[in-house]
Image (cartoon, rainbow, N blue to C red; front, top):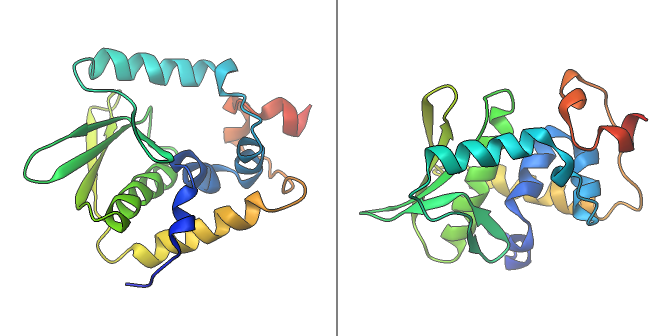
Length: 169
């Protein structure tokens, strides 16, 4: 396993997620410009999470990462709840980063992505993917260090983005 400095672990899971959704969004978010409180999609996600997984401990904070919920058993399970699969790669990389973070702190775990509207789950394993996560961490660090946001790339996902007005109005 290739080693990355522990300072890489100061990155939030949301930042890894945003890297795969939109580097411009990542840059704004990393500078403290948060628009999610205005987003009806974020509100819908929170509602579904509360309704479907009401008995679970919510938003487990471990260092810079905030996990939707954890189940403890023979192996710790990290659970993330998502609205749909249109950004599945971003969801998967966020979950992998959580596993990577925990592994670097001596905790073995697996991850489960929940898509309650689709009634689907997906298990995610870090095994053999540490380098991919490390490269994503390096790219997040690079984008966060830029003096201005990367140029946005217009796509259909922009219409539902909380940052739409910053990029396109």
